[in-house]
Length: 206
Image (cartoon, rainbow, N blue to C red; front, top):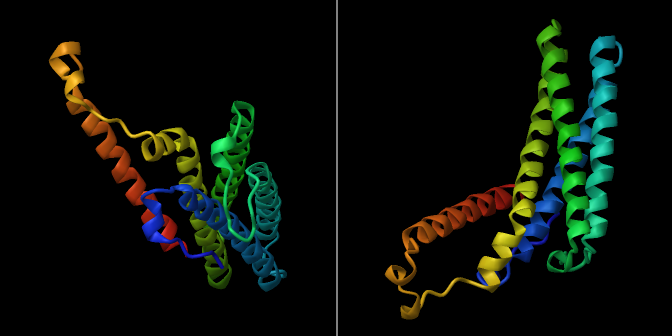
């Protein structure tokens, strides 16, 4: 169960969005892995090909969970407050987390592709339904991973926008420097829209 995000605090502190996004990605990966364990029990005597795919997926998702937990540990998460030390990351730590996130997402993608392949070959209706159910859970985990990765990749822009917003004064009137403030307005409106979409997806994951 995720802690509720205090919506009134988002305007001054974006950290809860990062925290919730990472926690949701982890939980959905765990749910996907658990669904594979249950699926293997339910079709244990029906198809060796499907069972082989489930074993492959279980291994891939377990690896993805390990990698995402590396990110969690490196972010120094307070498990009570779910407060990420995202602002204090060094360049090296940031690169490590990006690499772990990408590898975790690749594992989930490989699992999803394998499930798609085996689903197209399955003839037994009940078995096909089981594969489809697992595939749907893996797809949801992929989406949550993508949300987290998108937020983390844009963390510098997001934090800068919250803590160091651009202030346009009369002194920097654009004809003086030939600068297009229309472009800046377009850029930041796009950023805000992106944040709104991600925030909606995070809340939908609760």
